[in-house]
Image 1 (cartoon, rainbow, N blue to C red):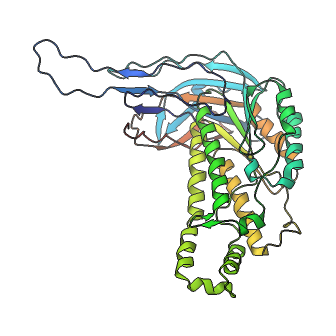
Image 2: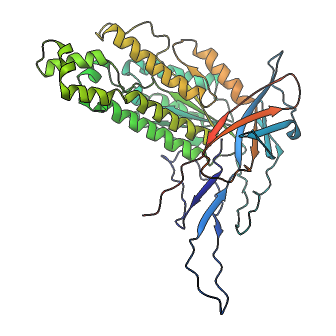
Image 3: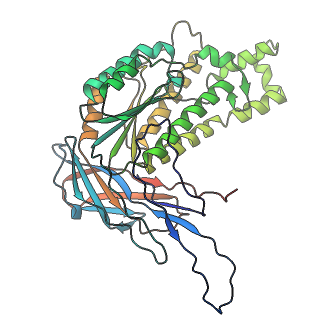
Length: 430
């Protein structure tokens, strides 16, 4: 989903690139609403602010299949699509079909609708007509070192089953693998990056025995902040690529902001020389810290929501893959309470499910059949439409907007995003 409306004062808006991941794309000059000087003899009025406004095309990818055969339908015309935003029918401005990896521009978008007193830029076409764009997001800060061989094998499978000749892809990692490759068609770039992928996630013992704060394990929260910030900035940069289905292959073992509660309680009791860990429940300092840590789940929900909103604005689909595969239980040397371990596993896997489901992707968790999952991702990214329109709702305060995409042809199943969220309005200049 492309963000559609941005408004700020005369400070020029510049989109910062993340690790050089995105190639230079032609940028449109900002639209400017100029204040007209008073004619001679007219009374001077207080200076009015000058606003820079841009109106962008709202885009969403749509998969259309026959109900009986589940086959992709590649001959839907623009007038057969209907898009409703918050129940209001929108006028379709563009339609791009990608079928079998080849791109067909069915309907090019016209310039955005002109508003009185505002000069709006025309969209400039890009020279690159690639139909598929893959971003490999390797969250090695949340991959156990012992998952390194599985993670490398997973990427090798992607080269064989998912990323084909002619596909554009980029790679970025969050931690010590130190991978940051620009979008490219060169498969050798991916091959050379595989050997550098190394898991650097925290072990259960390191989390339990590490420093604690009112927000939970200090190092764990720091790593999560780095991972989410990196992913969020990547989504913002993906907004520059339009009329593409952008598939983000999100390789991670997931997130839990308040893991191993019983183990951490016992470790705190040991450090404070308290024989019975349950006696800490009566300590006012510990109770205050525990109540703050109980909000960790809400903090995680907020982080996931911000990331999925950013992905939907960029029309990016997250396909989350946990390289641990089917997890039967903890490793024999972990020595973690079984209830603690099960809660941690459930929370971390659920976080990956949320990222995928809220962006229209697939969560590949707690399973070993990666080939089947990669083939399904390949099918979803090979055949799709990208429908675009200019929203008829100019209110920038209406941030979250519901979407309903339909086709008038009978016996058709339509899969598309159900909402998107505008970027927050900028604060006053400093």
